Image (cartoon, rainbow, N blue to C red; front, side):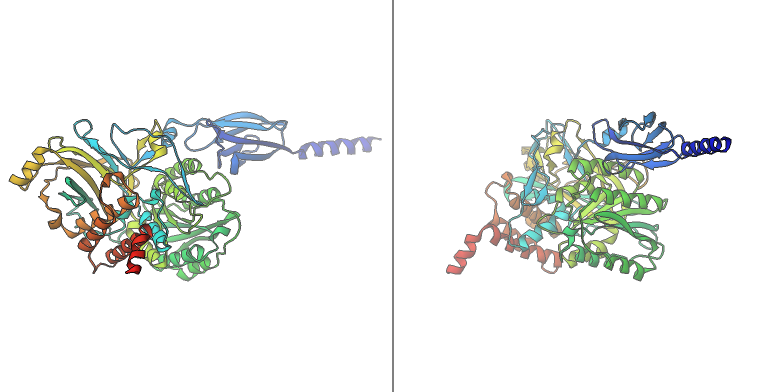
Length: 589
């Protein structure tokens, strides 16, 4: 009998040693939102785990009751006993600095900014954030306006896509500052060691003789590509079923091939694609191995759902693993924005990218497609992710963004850039910033904030204010061509990878010049701004419309500049879309 008892005893011991239990649960923040990629440590084994999509986790343990610790950047870490007998509900409390990141961001701001009711617009299957056009501000009450500066230029090529299809442009797709960003306005480079150069100009307003136009033109220093640090680029390419059209994944393949041909051996590229599930299609590879990188791009095929959230997480994790200290670390997301798996609302994506950008990895977003194009989602990712945003409607645009303007797109010279413009109430009765319009949801947020943008190498941008002059201003025009310091300007920024805030102060002397005698690039910029205002049916145009726009386009566009010549043609075609009766009348004659 003794051997039998011994066998039974040993069997029970072995069973006890092999006993396995399962701890299941989910992690959420204190707002009830699920948290993905939370680091979970099981105390009994020291083994690390992570929460998945929806914040869910499932962990094997040899104990009925164990202890787990939970941690995620931006949240308070803590430990708690967990039981295999129940489904664990874990809540991580957000740290104060993370809570600040959740506030909606403004593109322009004055102290008297008005709140608006929250709205969101769908244009068919396409989505755009609803904008509130800037109104006139009384200088005596609120002389200073803050303006975010960045290199986004997606709106213009998206407008071109609608007009090419002989379709009206959704008003919220018209972002005038991005239309102005699209063009190079031949501004001189900064002198010496200066990072920025700023020029101002004052003229009459061609669509309202009672007003003036005040231009602020800023240029960033151009970096020497041969001396810039190595790049760590992760191509995050949407290969879902919605991308299976000629102007989507095939266009992106052309775009990325063009970029790869301009990489240096010291640069490194990885490729993450997502369709059903994200996967690393190319591990980190030297820019010298161009054929290998291009082959991986060509092998991509469209199919499946669109787990954008999981794809973003995978790409950022890869970028962090291969992070180059002092280098250009950037995820390049290319998508139509039609995410349909995981957390994919605008609010969800904003919270996600807020966490990801803390890693020091930049983000460039390339939008493609039509019909189901989600501009609202891609714009949020770009603006919140320390990044920039372009829309590719054809192969020429891909070459413009990723080859001709590669340094502007991929190499930041300053972060968190914004300027404060303080008008002299003695010379300016009221003013209105054209473009830089805020989203309704941002204006409605009581915790709204101004969050600066990223400015790329050699980028030139312009802001135009419509100004109502005072009698003193008007008198100075007649007696003295110099209207004094109509405004003081301060430029605020940080250098890349630096937390030190910097500031440059300008007190430009504003020489008034008649609009017809102003420099051609400024006259053209005003024409672009008018085009955007006409497309948006701005109430500030009064009687100005297509006739004034056509006259200005003919008079102030440089036909020898290919982009300006294309703009002239675009205005002509847009007029036929918006005023088809004009076309019919011509045919009748």
